Length: 389
Image 1 (cartoon, helix red, strand yellow):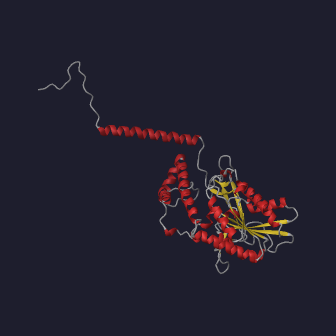
Image 2 (spheres, rainbow, N blue to C red):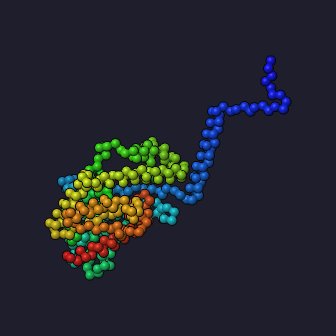
Image 3 (cartoon, helix red, strand yellow):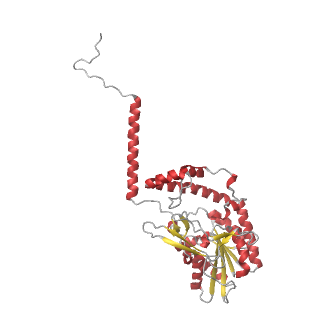
């Protein structure tokens, strides 16, 4: 029988591991390295104090009411007279928590009580717009209409300039003009100023219908992953995907940051695309804006009231290379075509870091500092026009 053992002085060949054992070992090493790397990044994130800013308790509810079309045509809803609501904005490192109060006067617009009849020697400006004009995220004293009123007092002490804030959250151009039609005779303004925003041509009631097309891939992934801008407080997640994602975000600050950034990136892509489409030639939203401006210009002309307009810039990115400059020019052209004087307020905020101009990390409305700059700027550019009447 043949000898199978190694003779003296000879070395036995090592037994080779099966290929699948080598693959498992390599996979284990890779997984272990990845886990260690993730753990180190998680520790680094915590050590540097990086985190998603806490969300507020939600937008103030109960400040508006549905309005029958036969009572006020074209607005669908208005602010509720004599209602006060608050919203709490959680604090962040270096930023204390704060509470914003929204007080609606007896007429149904934000601000102090004013007489319907204009006082003698008072120049009255009626400001139309949406949440940027109304002042979501700031107290009454920090809204840009009131900042403009204060600036007028400094620029021209010879008379009283009164600014009525007719801004209503979620209003578009058509609704703002309908509100003007409802109130113009009762308050007898000397000048009308409409402040639009880039989303004026968007939305279901402005020509964009959600059921018309399948949601874009970005939105589908937001839903699949259960992404949101931040973690809720008392409000529960709405879907199973959100519940799973929230469970992970509660345990890992790294996952929380990644989910927050990914959601912002995906939602931002959709928003950008929609805004460009809604302001393109022939879109239903742009047709609505042009039609509403024509109606407003005709109404103002019939009452002998100068009509001016502006557009608040979006504060989600730098203004030096403004993403929606072309859309602002489209709005300017629509205004000027019907005789409305347009004022570009981007110069008022030029050179500023837009992250310092927002009401909160989860609320991209302008803060008091931004509104103070805009109010002052508009008072300066409108001052010559107010002296003509």
